[in-house]
Image (cartoon, rainbow, N blue to C red):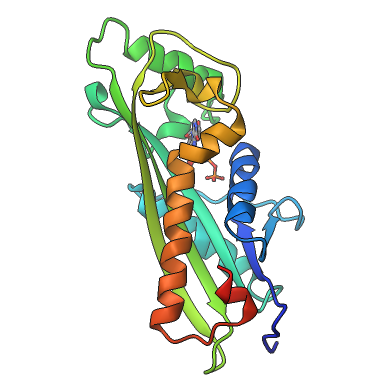
Amino acid sequence: MPATADTRITIVLATANRDKVRELRPLLETISPLFNVVTLHELGVEVEIEETEETLEGNALLKARAIFALLSERFPFMIALADDTGLEVNALNGAPGVYSARFAPVADGRTPTYQENVLHLLRCMKGVADRAACFRTVVALKGLLPSAQGEFRFEHTAEGVVPGSITLEEQGREGFGYDPLFLVHATGKTYAEMSMEEKNSLSHRSLAVQQAVTDLRNILQLKQIPLTDTNTHL
Ligand code: ITT
């Protein structure tokens, strides 16, 4: 498919987590109105991607590659964007980290609920004085875009980290996952005490997404990909 001046770049969000989609879509659309952001749900794609790697970067790449492979025939030019996120607690030697989704022990092998993970973390931190922690997101991009040579394939990862601490009890009702326990010192609030707009203005996820888009723009310029109207606005 030839590139045209008004071609928007399709970004497929390679996540099954609707809470992450709710944050990622406005983040990307704010950075550039020329991104055409689509979700797996909107595409009618239901897929379980097993996170078999031991790092956030490995799992983010694994998810971006899997969704790119699945959809590249449907979208000749597109970027699959995956996010792998972990909460790293100092006193727990960085746990739950890459295993944040499956932190609480549950009997039947299912994925624990957010609430079960939150309560398990509070139990692990009972009586612990050092409450320092950070939230880390790695965003992976796997894409194929039009270029003067016909096409340009790339893979890239970018990271966002926010330091904070684990509260003694749940605070706030917004957000998802561990948000009620994660206090961002600069604001004096947990993520769950912030609106989505406020969380998106400073979160680990937003830092990673902004870095990934900046890097993508630089990569395209470095590779002398002729900037269409689309790419100019990245
Ligand atoms: P996908 O792999 O489909 O993207 P997931 O829920 O497995 O969805 P992650 O592995 O990246 O996503 O996230 C692991 C867990 O970390 C997630 O289930 C939440 O409990 C928690 N989490 C991720 N991002 C978070 C955030 O911004 N705030 C609070 N908790 C978060």
